[in-house]
Picture 1: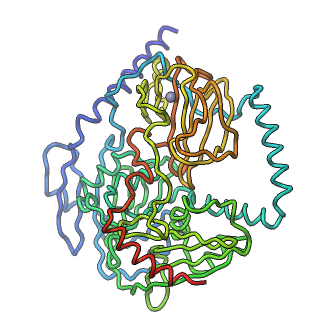
Picture 2 (picture 1 turned 60 degrees about the horizontal axis):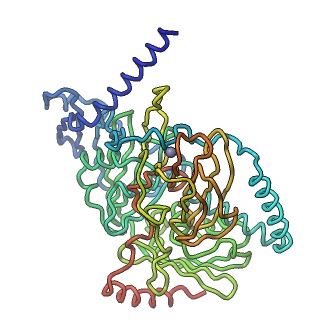
Picture 3 (picture 1 turned 120 degrees about the vertical axis):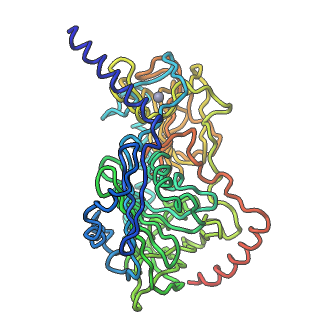
Length: 518
Ligand SMILES: [Zn+2]
């Protein structure tokens, strides 16, 4: 017993030391570059002495340049459809620990926090839950009476596709908007800012992104960056691929394709994916479309027979369309109404009238700036077990009964109770990509399926479930992955255009409207 206790203390100390040494040696990597047959190799140096001669000893650089991306078959198009006129392969080495989250300086208030707020498999039953289930059943019955089976299957199919498009395993895509840094791009998949910092340090070009550039990337099963495709311009593409735990290869591809603007039309006929794919759209483009539309359209209003027109800029090689391209505008016609999402020069999507899509997010789901009792920390140590127990949200110390407000417009996705975990909790969905979670509540003020407006009260804070003091545990998810609610670049915030830019946009939008005729 004593030995076990000693061992656990020892492991705790080792873990603590391991974490502490991370921020101290972020620059222990020396980089040596040598030019050889058009290939540059960046070599890792593990010691403090830089020995440039070792760069020549690096084997396999020629073999590696012949390798095709082998992440998933979905990526095959890149090697098939692109003429590699000029190819350059570079190795980037990332040291152990560089991907780690730096330890937070904020102190933890042991009196108001939660160490095991992961969702457990099943929600518990209490009076409110029984009431909720009854209400859900009643709602379902009412819905079934309203919708005919055809409309329902079309709706299901659309929701499935939107879901699939946004979450195709661990694949992500993003169009750079003005002011975006690589960290903002990678945060879409929940990657820490450190991943971006490391890549920028080794590859400075990544520190200066341009509006409209596109990223497509894949995470491995451990949530680490495995593959990243950067469409630098119409003529240049860079592929970053992890070769071993700490090493990335970089390939530069000069492209000889021709870019053309296409108008693609279709009708929603029950299978949204296949009707879009039949029009030559890739998963990535469907993903872009869903993201561009997410604040515009209530997907439950779409029916079989609804029409869409899409304006695309696409690359052709030898007359054949490749899967590279950009969705410039979308019009969806449902009933007698048209919904538009048009890309501005700043990379973001706006309505026909230059309005931003979505009213933006508040930083806090509260009417005031709260005190943080425990910060977001993917590598938090449990104070008793000394095990790593990720803290996927931020804790705000609050008196029981403090009103919690929706930080953005959304729909209540889930309300439940877990005695051994989250306590009473609420999950809201905002558009297609964002969800927020509120735990340890004393009371819920909303029901599943209900629409909420930004600023509307959704519940009262409490101390339910596994909680050591009154507080709110708040999570912010992008594409299903938790990110730091205190630092995340909030969607829709500051996305309004300056007057001059807005005028130019309105001129462009009028032209595009004319192109989007059915
Ligand atoms: Zn918490």
